[in-house]
Length: 180
Image (cartoon, rainbow, N blue to C red; front, side):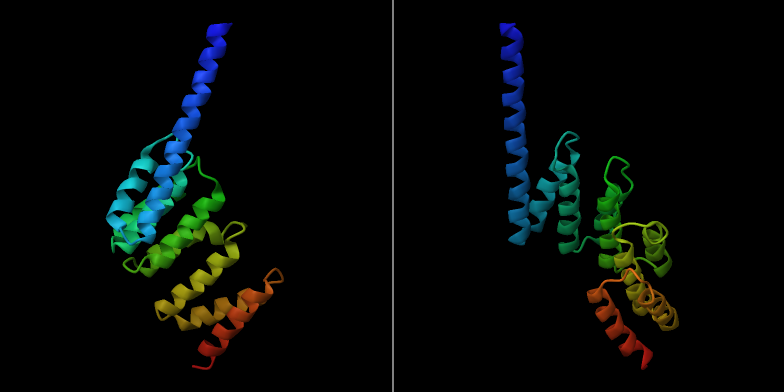
């Protein structure tokens, strides 16, 4: 009984120490990112993201993607986000967020590639579906498909579940591009 209790207490202590180390490492990586030390932050986020039992794995992948983006490594950033949205153990909200961010920050992929990344969100109800629809409108504008952008704007503006803030934003975009 004493050995079992001692072992259990030892395990709890070790687990708590490991959690504190992971936490310190993650916040150190964030600090490096904020201080524009992108290579250093990338190294730390990568190490943390590879630890399977780390509670910071998903957050570290987002941090790694941001570090690569800030470092101008767009293909690596896309790969980091893809590792999030293809991982079935990650909650769908974070997977959708990774898809949206990968599209918004990707300035090297084709329109078709970017739009196909958004399709899983656009085709399934989720908390981020309306945001993905806005990002798609931004893609239409960015790739000079203004007729499609205006059509999508009008469709989105007619939805009953649109927020007041989103309606104002979309109305403004609609006025700018409908007048041209």
